[in-house]
Length: 269
Ligand SMILES: *[C@@H]1O[C@H](CO)[C@@H](O)[C@H](O)[C@H]1NC(C)=O
Image (cartoon, rainbow, N blue to C red; front, side, top):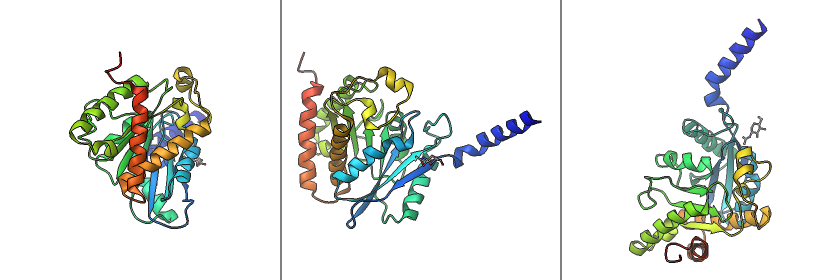
């Protein structure tokens, strides 16, 4: 009898879990006035949604936008966001942000690791205005130039999971785009943080695979978060056209040139 009850409970959890389990944790803006926007995080595999709180707060600290945050989490299957979860998870985030008092619809998706693999296909046909990929990239068959939204590819030099050698291919793709369309630098920037690792896009305890493959960072987590905050803030300014766009573009250009010294594309053998 007990086991029958248990089975029934498990079955109904599986059945209804899909739409009910995913939640969003909202962090209100720290600025008291000004144009509003929101960043909505999609976590990496088996990483808790709240593990991005410090990263998100660093973006708020760097930005002059009245910036809301939604951290999606509690994904049904092994705490892992899947393509099937995303439409419902994001709908839940938009609704919760509006309910919390957000004005307007300037939503930007932020995906880390596997979350950054699944976010771009969803984002193509969604209310999102731009996409940020942390330790992730647009996968094969999705070129930067044909992707319909602005996308920031932000990588870490000592990322042991999403290796800098793979991101260098995306950087090279961007260099080619820039040679014919210079504004690509600002629409689809590919940046890199010196000395940072995969885990530093988040914080707290990491799942076993991240611990196993990640490299030892040369900078502190706080320093990594500050740089993530600054790059994402500049990208938000430029892609949403809020605030000092000229200054934002100059910062993205400088970060792009700095990244080039580590990607060392082709001409260096
Ligand atoms: C996950 O669920 C717990 C328990 O309900 C909640 O406290 C937490 O805020 C949720 N996490 C996210 C990221 O929504």
